[in-house]
Image (tube, rainbow, N blue to C red; front, side):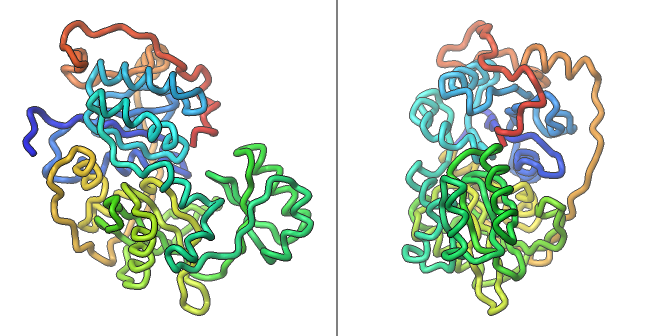
Length: 385
């Protein structure tokens, strides 16, 4: 498929703290590919997202309303961005964005904005609430799990899910509980931050592994890179890891793809128990923050997802190089306060030379639209992640 002009790819999730969003890794992977000659449109939820200020990442940046502010506000803002700089492909990287963007997919497609995402049904199939259903449909081992909506259920939940167990939010968050007091405290903390329902999952002792993968939407696996975590933060997030060659772990990934007909990127979290079996802990419906390692290991999965969304012929992937490592680092980003002020005030940072040209259905004067639902307080972003 030939292009009339370089692709303009919008990427969300530019937070890069000690619990980073995946957007920075996705952008680095796109720019890593020698065939990428496009423009990157960064979509951020906070003017202090550090990925905004990293050099050579996004050509233009726009602040977005949080998904919790509703589809109308989100759609209006995407339309504005599209009319201002143009979007050919949208690569969302945050769990909380997906239901809304999936619902908007027909409208986005009509605008010329393409995605490669799971259906809402597929999204529901891999949720923590329904994870145990994969035991039968995919033949996968899954830790004992219960879904509760009231703290009183914790008094007896240990009869189904033995202590110690994790108390998890439906989208984010996990607290280890060794007894009822800890379970109650964890329940209220998770509910206060993420709401109901709450998932209780048995803790499995063993080694933690993750797989970043892309499914073709027909039950096949486009590509996958498994990784063993070698260093964890105090939040349990991987700070270092190494790509491994493990046929059994790849078979777990293929079984998930076959059972769900998954479409698009995902991250499979598994643990190898003391008996040497893999148990499926979670399936995150987007790229992980460490996804750039897939590019450096030889399987550039973000670039593949972009190609699939754009309807291009997919470049051959892999094989990936086992032994490729990543070690996360912290860097200070420096910028002028005027840059921050302009972004916070106008909700956009236009770096690319021709950003003012209209890319709507009819070219012409750039429309001046208000920033619908722009966050007013940079400290209120947590729930969006």
